[in-house]
Image 1 (cartoon, rainbow, N blue to C red):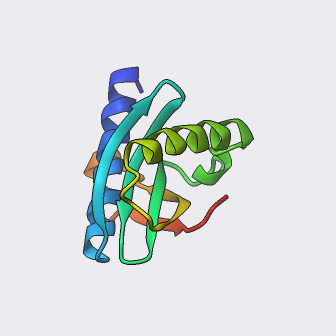
Image 2 (cartoon, rainbow, N blue to C red; image 1 turned 90 degrees about the vertical axis):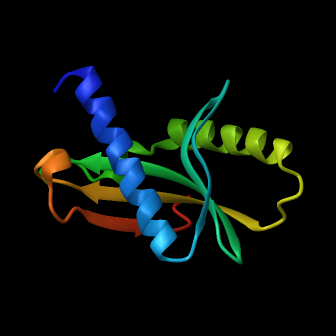
Length: 123
């Protein structure tokens, strides 16, 4: 898979995760938020939480689960990026948390029913 194809597949997975959260009553506040520290795929809120969401899409189950790619280094970058976003939005006083959305899509974007597994409060 080329870099462009992987990026397209990743954006498709992020859109799936955002739509799934919307169906569950969440509001998507930002997608692809970037700072000098890194990127947060999705930022969403409901009546209790402000979730900083890392989306990991896999086309095969044989590899490590998506959550395994969110190692300590990635977690630190996500925390720093979330702090940057929070400093720009002091009006939001919801409890922050970090979630991981694992998406399994064996046929890539042609997958009819991708499986989404949410790991809430992942770290």
